[in-house]
Amino acid sequence: MLSREGERIDFKKSVKHLGKVEEWLNKIQDEMRSTLQRKLKEGNIAFADGKQTKKDWVMEQPAQVVVTVDMIQWCSSTEDAINEMNIEPDSLNLWFASNEEQLNMLTILVRGNLTDLKRQILAALITQDVHSRAIISELRRDNVQSVFDFNW
Image (cartoon, rainbow, N blue to C red; front, side):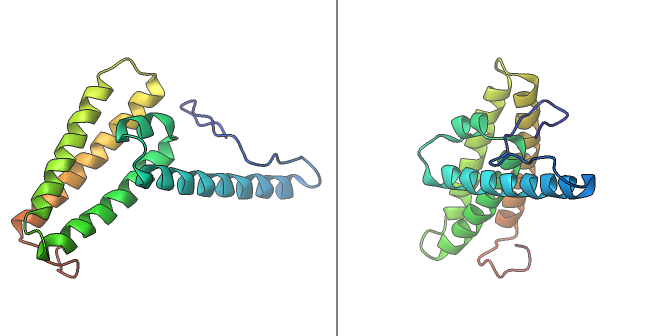
């Protein structure tokens, strides 16, 4: 697959042009879905295992994987922080501070020497993470104590 921005993701299996054009296009679409599903799964595992910093992980993953997995992991971590409030009342504040640190790191990274594609990926991620930080701020302001609170 080749995006308009120039990002390339190789199919796991090649798709041969045999038969009707419509059938071939459907096979390509199926392989696109399969490839992205595999990339998302691999990216999610790589993010969660903690072997790489977020900075390194962002630079290695395709754009769609970065924004999707980042949101999956953010939601999971936010719920963890809310659930931990029974044990650590400051957990949501600590999670907010962690988000601030990650945003600072991304801001420094986006100012560096990057390809246009990586700069676009980082800009999208920063926009998403700023919104996520605002949500955590609202959760703190509203004194959310449970994942079952309406505001979450």
